[in-house]
Structure formats: structure tokens, C-alpha cells
Amino acid sequence: MRATVEQFEEAKSRMSSLKQDPGNDVKLKIYALFKQSTLGPCTTPRPGMLDFINKAKWDAWKALGETPQEDARQQYCDLIGSLVSAEGGSVAAKPSGSASAQYETLLSVLQMYDEIVTALEQAGKDNSVLTVFTGAGDFYCSGNDLTNFTKIPDGGVELMAKQAGELLRKYVKAYIDFPKPLVAVVNGPAVGISVTALGLFDLVYATERATFHTPFSQLGQSAEGCSSYTFPKIMGNAKASEMLLFNKKLTAAQACDFGLVTEVFPDSSFNSEVWTRLKSYAALPPNSLALSKQLIRSTERERLHAVNDAEVELLVERWTSDECFTAIMNFFQSKAKL
Image 1: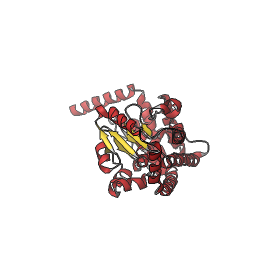
Image 2: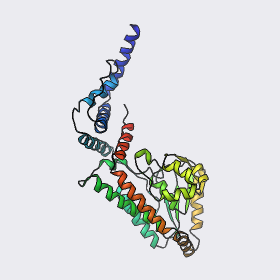
Image 3: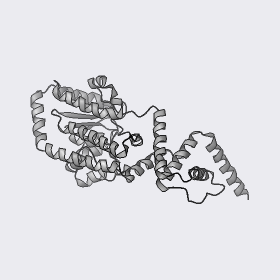
Image 4: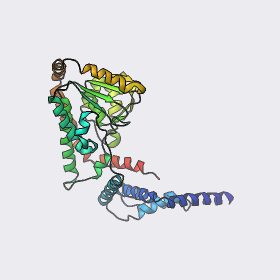
């Protein structure tokens, strides 16, 4: 009987903590909507009297009654979107240098793609010798904002996927067709499109603390940035599959060994060493660099465009699938654990 009393007091204490944290109400709501949208109405047995946390979860799910799964899905999207808005939205990595002053909305995820395309078009025509991408802060790029999947336009998921696909096609095309040397200065962790596009760069320098992650299958999606072609070519099919199919995160040293990164530098001297080297490259004859770059790219340009088209077509299908939506909901659910 003593053990039972102790268990009761412990459970009561945990329940008290649960009630005192208002954030748990939101977490319970997220949990309930996730369950309702993926499994339908609650039909599981009610947890035992002393299982206060699971009982709270069960009550929240049960309270949704016969709410249709589609309605629960929309409520889930609305709730996630409102939470992100309340926190001020997401911030994407911003390239440093002169472009950052002109293209201030690079901090806005959707506008970022269009403005990077515009910046590349202008850099391809100006008097610069080479173009450098790097990140602001501790990250090179934290990847796409998954809350975009909660912002369904009036035209529905299909319209959103089609528009996103065309934007991605245009974005990757700008890298394929860029006429000058393109350099990535990877100053920290990189995720998603910022990693896959590296196969289209001419030089990739990384700090030793950089990591490279492409969690596509984990999110119910597929490869992008021509990586379904460039990665197997650069590192071989087996290593490429580890990244693109099985979500393997590479260290900077591994990425260099596999050929994705040109050279890795100590974090303490990264900026000084890399930018000193780039300044010397910028003193090279510009026409010689540009024409040589174009010659190298000319043998594969048509193939890369075809790969880009195929990847976009598959991604549009993925973005409209239940599997993709459920995977992204699982991601948000994992961030809202009680």
C-alpha cells in the first residue's frame, strides 16, 4: 500500500506541473489534432487513473469527437502557423557582402528564392570576377521553412505545390546557367537546398564545424538541386544514397573526403584564410575564368536542366501527397512533446 501511495503522490505532482504550464494546453491541442487528422476519432481505451499525462492526452483527443480528419488537418495547420507568427516567423540565412544591403528581404524565406535568382542574374552581368555565397550568423543555411506547408492558399495544396515547383525550377536553373565561378563559403551547419545546390558550385570551402544534412525521406520528400545526378557523380552511388535516401548527416571532414567540399579550415582561422584566398582569385583574368567555367559546364548543361525538371516534377507530386503531409506533421509533433 505504501508503494501505491508514493506512486499516487508522484503522479499527482506531475499532474500539478502539467496544469501549471500554460504551454502544455497548446501541446495537448497539437497532439489531439495530430491524432485526429491522422487516425480519426479517438477509439483507444482510456488510460489508468494514475497515468495523468496520457490521460490528459486522451481527454484532449477524445474532446474532438467526430471532427472530420480534413477539418482536424486544417486546424492543425492553422495552429502551427499562428504559433510561428507569434514567435516572429522564421529567419533564413542571408548571404553576406554587397548583395545583403540591396536585397534586404533575403530574410524572408519565399522572397529569398526570387531575390537570389535576381542577384545571380545581376552578378552574372556585372564586372565581378566570381560570386561567393556564405551565411549570416552561426549557420550557413537552416533549410526551408516547413511552416510554409501550413499556409495553404485559396487554390489549395495543388496550386501551392505547382507554384513552389516553378519557383524551385527557376532557382536551380539560375545556378546551372551562372556564367562565372561560384564559391560557397560554408560557415556552419547547412540543411536541404543549401546542401544539394553545392554540386553546382565550382568551389566549396567549409569550416570544421560545418555539417551537411539532406533529410528528404524523413519529411516525405525527394531530392532537389540536381543532387540526384551530381551527388552520385561526386561521391558514388552508395554514399549519395546514404545522404539522399537515408538522411545521413555529414561532418565537414566527411563531406571533403567524399568530394562535396573542396577544403576544410579550422574554425578559428576560417574567415581570414578563405577570404585571403578568394581575394587572390579575384585578381585573376576575369574572361579566362568565365570562359573556362562555361566550357566545363557546357558538357552537362542540358543534362542538368533535364534532371532539374524531373526532380521538380517528383517534388510537386510529393508535396501534394498524404505521406509528405503526415511526415511533416510528425516533425512538428516531435517538437511539441509533453
